[in-house]
Length: 171
Image 1: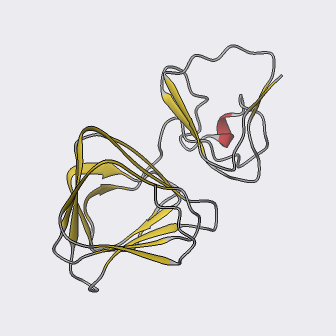
Image 2: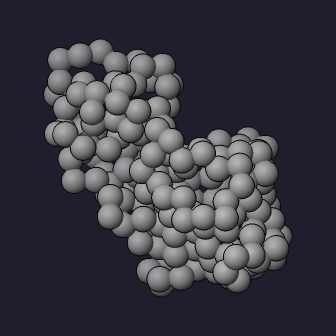
């Protein structure tokens, strides 16, 4: 996990990861231009910033691309992506920013991504990235101002990731 407090972390060479994770708000990840970063089959790619504190993914050379080859599971929210090729396609979610020169990226709503846009109520649809209370999907709880509270309901999900600094309250 990339948690160093330094503003910029540079990843050089062609590397294969089983787990590549960054949940440090305002982090800047620089990938060597022309390099390929591979997430192994069954691996995990997690890039989760915060509201107003996007994690930036950039090439070390402006307008020159780097490639992310994702053979695993990805979780993206609050990321700002530029000059990147996602060889197998990556959904960065609606909270992420397309800063240009990206190939095979989707910047759209992500089912199961908590935003807390309205309040702390788990069952309020507008608190979720795709405006749907999750059922039967994986859920991600990032570090946002309104942390979720589940009260008096039954929710069935397949997996849950609670990012450092976040919490889920069950009443």
